[in-house]
Length: 129
Ligand code: ZN
Image (tube, rainbow, N blue to C red; front, side, top):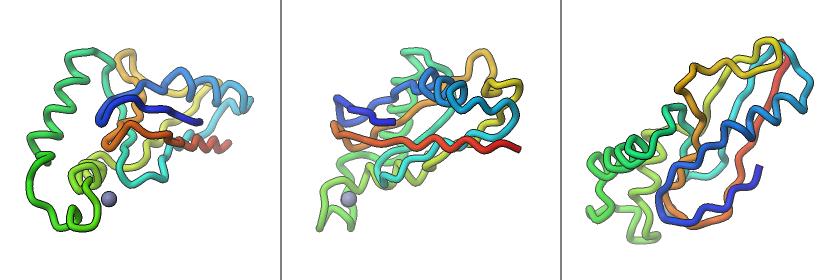
């Protein structure tokens, strides 16, 4: 799926798009793997609440400050985005049962932009098991 991000850092809820992909696949029992091939993005699962989305971005700023001196910034100006992506990881794996992804009531799947705005791609691989 294509994603157009609009700010440098943001969380974008892609749950409904993953649900649609699973439905379109027709697979009833299996595994859904959501990945990004970018090095300055992450895929996470958590609650979609406005304050929490801000808190997650604040946490990343606390752990990996944007303005710190980084070696990578001598050739590119986005070391913080790469390091934050390391913390988040580039994929999530979610089971599929009875044709639906198995998520808790408060769980949403997010694409996390860490060096936007950019055009991004997320891959959804659905495997029948
Ligand atoms: Zn870079």
